Structures are given as C-alpha cells and as structure tokens.
Amino acid sequence: MPGIEVVAESPPAMDDTVRGYEPYGAALELFYDRGPEVLLSGPAGTGKSRACLEKLFLLAEQYPGMRGLIARKTRRSITESALVTWEEKVVPPNHPCLRGATRNNRASYKFPNKSEIIVGGLDDPIKIRSTEYDVVYVQEAIECDEDDWEELSGRLRNGKMPYEQIIADTNPSHPRHWLKKRCDAGKCHLIESRHEDNPMVWDRRGKRFTTAGKRYIDKLDALTGVRKLRLRKGLWVQAEGIVYDDWDPSKNLITMAQAKDQYRFDPAKCKSYWDIDFGYTNPFCWQWWLEDPDGRLLLYKEIYHTRRLVETHCETIRELTKPFSKPLAVICDHDAEGRATVEKKLGVVTTAAIKGDNFGIQEVASRLKPAADNRPRLLVNRDCLVEVDAALAEAKKPTCSTEEIEAWSWDTGHGMKKGDRPVKKDDHGMDGMRYLVGWRDRENNEGVWTNTKPTAKDHQASPSLGMPKEW
Image (cartoon, rainbow, N blue to C red; front, side):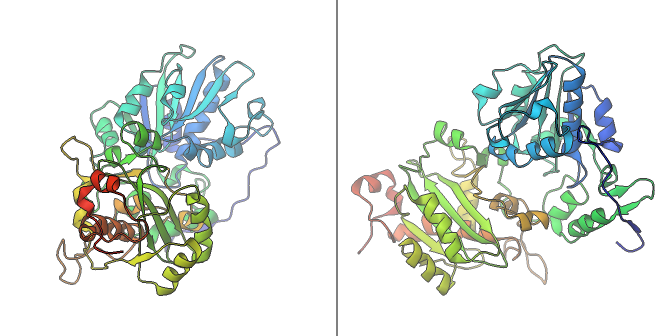
C-alpha cells in the first residue's frame, strides 16, 4: 500500500513455560466483556480465534473446576484450526493440560486445578450437548445454525464462574445471516475486529504494518468482489447479482450424520455420479455425488486442488471409492488428455459436459430451493473436502465449492445483463456442479447411462431418469 511504512519484526523472547500475549482493540474488549453472548467479527487475519482461545485459557486458569468447550460445526474441522492455535500459540509449551492424546484424538484438556476444556463438533450432539459448561467458544460461527447456538447457550450452567458466556468468532457472511440478525436485535454483542488489533500484522508503536503484515494485506488487497469486502474490509455483504441467491448454508450445508438421519444418503447403497473440471494452475475439481431414493443429490466428497497431475488425483479417487460401485456417470470438462487418463486409471467411461454458459444453472437453482416438504433437493456435506490446498488458502482464494457459491455472480460488464452469463472466475466447482446436475435433470431424461446398467429396481426408484435406448 503506497505511503505506508513497513517495520521488520523479530519474535518476542520467551522461555519454555510462558507464551507472550497482550490483547488490543477488539480482543481487549472481548476480555472485559461478561455478557451472555459475544461475537468477534472481522476480516481475515485480525487475531479473532487467538483472542477467544486466550480468554478461554485465562478463565480455565483463574476459576478452579471451570468447564469450557471449544466447538465448531464438525469435529474434523477443529483439529487443524482451533487446536493448532490452542496448542502452538496459547497454551504454554510444558503445561500439564497438553499431556495425553494427540490433537486428532483429543477429547479434552485437563488442568491441575480441575478445570477442563472439552473439544467437540456439533455433529456429535450426544457427546457435546450432554455436558454443562461455564464458557463455550464457537469457531467460525457462521457455519452453525441458530438451533446449534441456542442449544449450546442452554448448556451454560456449570456454576464455577461469576458469569456464563458463549463467545464466537467469524469472518462476515451475507447481511441476512441469522447471526448478524441476532446481533442487530441486541441478543448478541458484536465486536468488530480489525487488522490493527493483531500485533503480528500491525506495529502499534510505529503505526505501520509489520513486514509479515504487509505481505498478508497485499494478498487481501488482491482479492475482488464480495470476498475482498468480507475478508479485507470485514463487511457483511451479499454479492451483487449472485447466481444462486437461494443458497442457504443453514439448509443446504449438512453433516453426514444429518445426511443419514434426516435423509437416506448412504454411499454403499445410493446411486452415485462424478463430475470433473480439469485444472493444474487453476484447481482440479472432482465431485462425488450421491442420490437418495427420493432423488435428492448430495455432494459427498470433493477434491479441489492445484499443481497436481490428473494421474495423481486418480490415485486419490481410487482410494476413496475403492469399496464402492462405479458411478453411473462421469461428466467431464472437454480435456481429451485428462479424460483419457481418468478412463485408463479408474476404469470408467467419461461423458463430455455440455458447456454452454448457462447450461445446468437453472437445474441447480431449482434444486437449492426448498421442495414441498420444506427441504432442498441439493445438499453439500460440510466435510466433503478431501484436503485443503494450502496454496489456495494462503492466497485467500476459494478452497472448495462452497466458498465459490456465495460469491459467484452474473457478469454485468460490457453491456451484459443479469442472467446472460456468470463471471468466469472462481467457478471450478460451480462448473462441475452445473454440468452434473444439468446432465442428471435434463439430458439424462433420454436415458444416457454410461458406466452401470440400472436394474428394474433402480428404474422404479427414480423413473425420471428413464431407461437406456441401447447399450
């Protein structure tokens, strides 16, 4: 950023039993806040999670017998996010609470004063919601629904502290999100976090970015559209002219426990389909879809990764799908070499996608809307992503399809009108999704089965698919 000085920093000196931390700005306000619900909201890189975890640790040390919770929508997502910060930045290196299980298998952190910090995902309600707490910390609270939040609030009754509290952090989402509305209604105190609150980004004495902070801010400044407004400016905004304005994470994004309990998604029994959008510099995107007996579609697994060869992705796909039947169809981008590799390595027949600008968009949009039973017909498994691409995450680019969908918008430049065609950027998962759903709901009415011959039972379960004309 022109005109802003940069100062080089060296790590603070510390011994092997103490980690240095001093809260500023929003973090300091969070430390003093004793209200029942507090949300730390702001751009990426402002130290929100660190502040919440530092407060949690301080309370566990200060109040013997205190019971806290570190939670996120799924347990899997905590291991490489909150627990890394907790173990490597917050808890002193030789603290007794670190003894025991590794992060992957960690159920709780027990303190010498009988305090305990429990770890869990909201996808395991029996384990998490059968315990009483003094403080609950929810990371990335926009992933949760309001029922989750109110259920956790109801568990705040352990009585070992002068007050009880649910604290949370989040990057902003759209302004209609239930969490923003809850704050607007005064039920939850929203504290706005800024980059100046993070001493790793901003040098308070010199009033300038640190060297590392300047590099980080440059990456955020390179973003465009709604992602820049949210991750750089910290604004709760909706993409202008969004393609899928019926996408609702509280309804369309579910855990696999919900997929099995509330629907009938079982990878061993359901029809399955794959779609592939080839890429190397841009992400390679493979999506594995399941179809339940009622014709709903679930994005079950996804590979979204750059800088890997197709044959390497094929090895991963083979391992993931080895115990299961081949998909009914594999709908692919028009990369002839990529398709040939997939067919050779995985023993499937691929079908070239219909690549019109708008092909499949209407079918996806229709499925995102609640049906007569008030449930959508297109769903996404929250933990579908097989592996986070560290390079994409570092560049603050989408790392999966669900991070594309909220920002994917219609191109309105050069005389274009809303509905003419979408912007051709950050659309790798969106392309694969529309290829597959368009094929499933429109083209396959002609009965184009490519990999597995359906039985009479299959035909009865989903008559709209039709039967093949010839084999």
